[in-house]
Image (cartoon, rainbow, N blue to C red):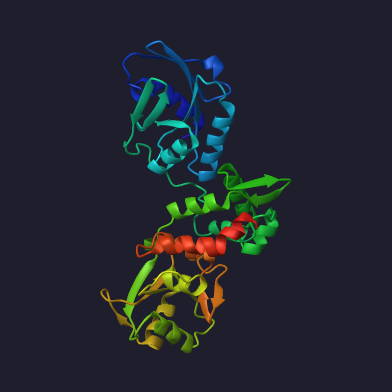
Length: 351
């Protein structure tokens, strides 16, 4: 939904959103050029202005930019800064509160306070579920752009240069670059593309990502512990034509050890890859008691991009590892945060 349409819907819904006895509100259109909505409010003799900034994009950089713009433009003590959207998740509501900005959404969630005036109505579900983006930056092929740019966040890329590097059509990369800029994930200056807000991109990416979308094949291998499984993998001399890469806790255990784990997860390209490992390792199907999980990736083009060799074994990139860990139920988020602190934080900060 476009911002001007959201603003019109808010204006029509304002009485429903603020059902407060004794509250008189008037939308002043001539005053609202600077903001999306300018509302005069009178609550039992207490007069104040509600300054509304609308956010339509769900990206975290765009959201934070709106908060900063709203805070910097509201200087009057009688002006109440309010961020509005079709729906604000509990996480986004927390961001508003932490920034000292109030909020309301078309789904019914409201938090506005000024002296003796106080409204807090939260817990309403999303009435405007987000449709899949036509140009989803986190889709399989498109993610190659972010994966490459996040490797050197301060680098500026020419569109054709980037397209050649990641093996995509320059026209497609150009269209995605426009979408990335609109979402606040990148900026374009003199024809060059550069990444913005790497951590916020990663935060949005983990919200869009689901480890369960991979095709999981669970097996049992005769081994005393996970280290023994890794040794077996090292011993079989996996041929180059067999695409594979360790991930989740097994991958993290090689690049940034932290959590104890009992299952080894590994991406394998193609059905023949799974058959190869079944034969070489004498794997047994095991819904219960599995200790080796082979995954056929739904990120078919990008999951192996920038994979790394550690102790003679392939491991997915740190970005892919973070995505896989974050949603993994057994100490995954804890391990993801450790990986970020050890391997990604310094890269993103440019230190």
